[in-house]
Image: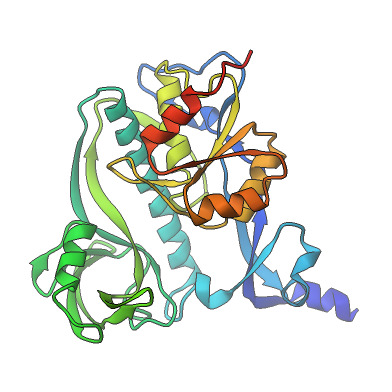
Length: 318
């Protein structure tokens, strides 16, 4: 009975669990595009994220491929579960439009993308931003100076010594507010001033073709690379060359592929879907993916164009 109780009572921790990679083609419609008829396909990977029971918190290894994460790393103090879910869905929505923009630009289409602020992706636990900033906040100014891009925000922060206070102009849930936050030093560079959140570029994007992606309740930005590859597939580019191509990575407007979380679970998910290759952001993400690849071919990429070149070098699979 005690074991059953431990299994039923939720803990303060979260579990990350693998989920088999999903084909993108059934989820996407592109104006003038068509589903490819050959073998292979583009797959995106996600992570099942849920509260751990007390039993799972004490013995996380009972769930194969899982990772136990302290709850305050997922839902910081002052932030609700609902806010975190809304932020994740917003990230997914942004990633879809950015992916379409990058792919269409790569095909020679004229795409208009105007930066409109820096999105708070996740508040860093232990920083003074906890309780001040919320996921999905859109920062548009620092100390009265417009900061519509991540680069502009970092330039303004460079004028402030670590530990100094900054006033942020924010759009939150359709309202303009002002928040004052004490800065901290970057853990990797004591001379660099940061606020304590993970930034994501917000933009107003105007696409020349209509692109619709139905991802349901899956949140987060990490499917961006897979979505961009599928847009090209829909418009006639043989990207996958007959292979099952799983891909993960947040894609930025300039085509950069940025690191993501949950690589262990995503690699296992790619294997479960019997992917032939797995495109992963270069660096620590790729190194972690290789630890769990178990024969799955890992391709490390830093940009969308590099991903396309890497796939183009694969011999055509029949």
